[in-house]
Image (cartoon, rainbow, N blue to C red):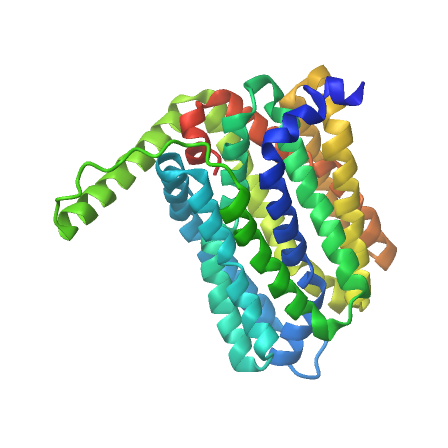
Length: 367
């Protein structure tokens, strides 16, 4: 009954199998080092200290740079995936995640940590958000409109499940092997995508093969500008897209600010260790799996995406409030439990955007 109400059951996911497998491996690999990075970065930049303002400064600077450039990179990558296909774009942006962790696997001295930050900034500009956006667009290409909310909830639920598995591996693996294993896992998704993923966008051959390189560059820049302008016009003219864009902007602004400093705050305030970081991240992601894969397919047909979105946003406010007022370590776990509910924000947002935009504009609008 669950799968029937969810919009066609697991049959909906069959066209997505070769997308979900590499995404799962990629997200597991990306999550594994998270609980370890706190100690590694602090030890490199502030040896002997339990807190490090320099690390928080670099994280804030990185998020600022990434946030500014993502305003341009995601629409451009979206247009490229609409024109040249989801597969080559997804292949390229997923592959960029290998290089930052390669620096830390090689050496964890101050110089290599600075190189890690530079490469991670470049990688996040290209991949942060765009991987999920292109994946959602791929799902929209192969899943009929009435069943997309179910498919999107499984994609975001898989993201949470992958994070749980990544944190479990980080909880039990020796710290010295984590970065090596991370790199090995990060190399697998691009290979799998190249071999198995089927393209859903038909590539139209270029008509300007005889043009000079300067003419091609000018035409390319002009085309990108027109595409971004058209996407902006679509959003501005649609009340639904305009409203969801504003909501998403402030939601992402707040949640990014919290996640940027959360683990460092927990270490400074309550002395959390790698294992406790893994545990609290598992609490959030494990609950997210239940809510996105099991609860959302049941609730969404009854109340609709907008009500689900409002409930998720209220939970995110409670999540931030309890962390800000935490007076004991157990309050942190209580706050983390709200992740079960606010995890519904993303799939509800994607479903609203997908219903309000055409298939050709999926990635351009989902930003």
